[in-house]
Length: 146
Image (cartoon, rainbow, N blue to C red):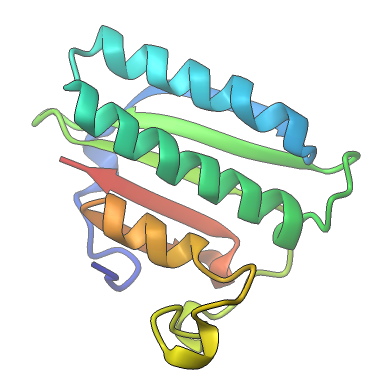
């Protein structure tokens, strides 16, 4: 589900669980994903949901590194894990890039895109998470899992 900015659960009721920064280097992605997965296990999030979140976070971080930071390891990607009083979690991935318009992305299910070697990350994130919001011009991604 793609929603308008600000239409997700209220930010004021969120508790911060993790606030991580990583260099914009694909080698750093696994450690951040592992840290988030471990935190979700401590919160008793079911394994299937942890796997879905881990894959969505991996895709979001890869997009931030490649597109937001243009593989410049001197730049930083921020990844936050927060929860609300109802047990819902949100992962926020922010990069210093110029952002993008998600509505302009090509549909990876269209025949001309089926064999492309890229262009499925945002689609996959939308399928794995319960809510997905692009904010601040597209350089901040908020992914909700209930």
